[in-house]
Amino acid sequence: MPRSPHTLSPAALEELCRQPASAAQYSTLTGCPLVLLDLLEDSPVTEQQREPLGLALTHMSCPVIAVAPTGQRCQLTDKVDVVVSSRQEAEPLIRNISRHPLAAMTLVQLLRHNDRANVQDGLLAESLAYATLQAGGEFRHYLATRPSPPEPPPNPEPAVLVARQGNQLHLTLNRPQQHNAWSIAMRDALFEGLQLQAADDSISKTIVRGAGDCFCSGGALEEFGLATDMSEAHAVRSSRHVGGLVAALAERVEYRLHKACIGSGIELPAFAGSVIAKPNTFFHLPEITMGLIPGAGGTVSILKRIGRQRMAYLALSARRIRATTALEWGLIDAIDSTVD
Image 1 (tube, rainbow, N blue to C red):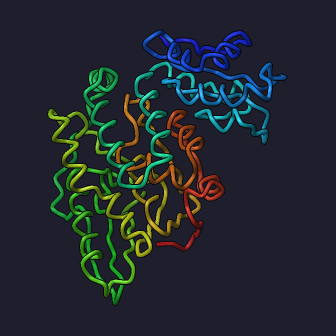
Image 2: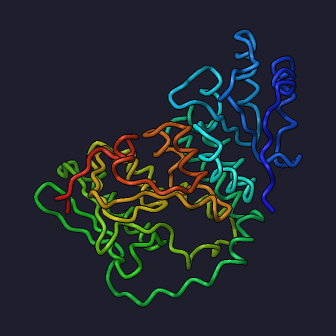
């Protein structure tokens, strides 16, 4: 059963102000999967107490959600993991965090770290965190209780089509029958395609698009759980990270998106210097519902584009957002109905 969030009382706030180390008691290990900070009414915290309290909030291992009036920012709201304007808005986060408290804890701790880290350090931390959760009970429970994913039909076509037109390189995700689900074969093929850009200065731009009815539906579900050695899985991500390569080539890489961009389908494009989406595009990070976190670089790429708190909200709520919201937040750079 999902556990209830812990709402900080005035007495608890006062204790945290006096003893920031007492934040250690707020943890999923003590039955506290998350903390709510209610700022809708007059706060009992004085100006002098805000700094030590803010420090204490950043030391909590579990997610901290502030409920504050729309548009109201203060020293405390800047320190928490997510800010919402009502308890109703917090409900999807509370539900997902309560059901997957270890994944939620890992996510917010990672985002706090990556908010201060460079791209490479952030990717390293994400890979280690992802490997930890792959070996964890929440992900194992997801694998044990989900319906068996269908086996994809044989496809002799390359996972990624590669074509050069003048000084442009075109890379097309080419598994439309599987909605361009992100598979090992597709990862390796896209990495090799991007290496052409890295090795050839005469290529001024690489354009990445998806064939079929959507750009990318996220990880290939039939490959979930196949890894048995998590240290080896981390080694693969560390040596052939598509997101890291896109980041290194960012000014010469453009992604053109349409319809579903789920999981890796937005984590990787977010590294690029230019991201253009059709009006029908939507974005979704569902990993928390599997006991995981975004693992294709999203805790770095999306974080850098939209900020730590919006990234935490997107990942913890598993909410879909439309292209208009993504543009407003800075997740994409333009909406264009004519993009191919």
